[in-house]
Length: 131
Image 1 (tube, rainbow, N blue to C red):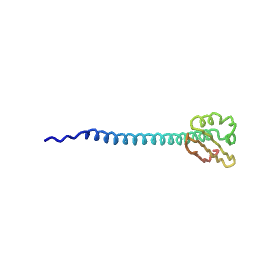
Image 2 (cartoon, rainbow, N blue to C red; image 1 turned 90 degrees about the vertical axis):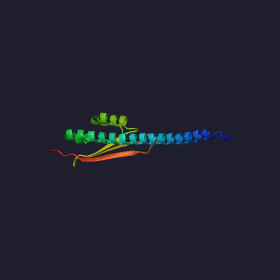
Image 3 (cartoon, rainbow, N blue to C red; image 1 turned 45 degrees about the vertical axis):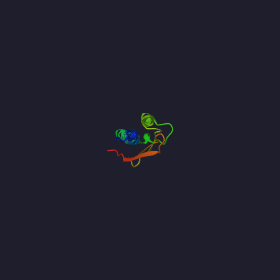
Image 4 (cartoon, helix red, strand yellow; image 1 turned 120 degrees about the vertical axis):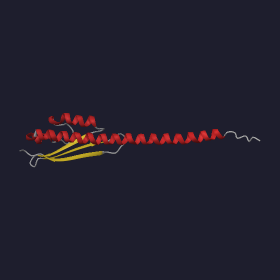
């Protein structure tokens, strides 16, 4: 005697497809999160490199250290290119440079806000002395 079992294979296929679909959705979520973390790390790295580049320029031109002071708005002549780099490299990038010529202390602060994200800030303090 033969027992007819109909539709069992179809149910197994549907269950397998559902499990596969959830797996693919999970992988897509992980990929989106990885891209977000990559963008954040890239922005942080760019901010560090930009602040280091400016401090290196200040070391080279330490006799004119006071000309690097910048609080926003129109950039001093020595900072025009650097400020443009900050605005180009970082989303909504902005910077300030505080200089105390008497002590040679400089503070470079770079801020940026990624799309649909929270504001970030990188601040670096250095002491630049004349030999």
